[in-house]
Image 1 (tube, helix red, strand yellow):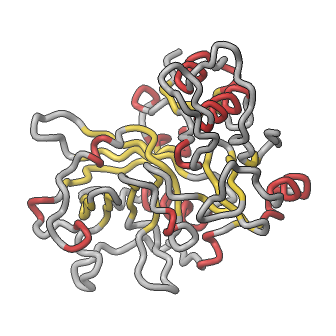
Image 2 (image 1 turned 180 degrees about the horizontal axis):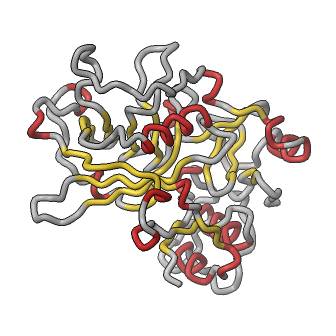
Length: 314
């Protein structure tokens, strides 16, 4: 049975269930979702990255939604400070590795002489910030989330899977953490105990690399313009790093949406993960019975249940 709670929803979505007579597909369920099932993304949680125009002179805007508390709060706070300081202006895309990640930041970050100084108020975040204890969500939610998840098959990386305010999470009965699905944004770092400042970021452009979960901080997700990153030429150096400045794509600016004029701000909303529409959508993703499918699988990887996000048109 699918369990829902106010803030955290264990993904007991995958147990086979009797579909409605029409067997609507995921897209049909999204299209039919009432307005009340959608939640607006606040402007203060949106990061707007403007890349240099493409070869045809077309603008390239990438919009990132920052992760809400209590997840990755130290890094997210740093990112807000970096954006407010306009630190990413004239930095660059430095790495594009096929079926893995696009990475950006200061191309000279490893050069002690040429590296761009960070703002003075950037904090060092401990590795403990990679996960959040269930006690942060309240007793009732923690009790539900600590129960084994009744998936049709076991997950290779976690014992429980959840959605929190539209974000995919994994857990082990004691703590929960965000997962590396397509489009998620993480913080580049050196070897442990370094955890990265948030100045060097990457986004996933391939198969979900969930082996990175709990090893790197996840701070957000690309909600618009991922095509401007995933379509970039692959780097020719080791791990997909660009070997010359000419290969890189310049980042003209990165701003919190609240810094932009009202007319220029992205206006987006997501399908609330506690809504009836999301429950039906997730069931449909896990048990495909619409016309094209002959054999329902009876399960879905959490990254194969992407949270629907759309522009607000009214």
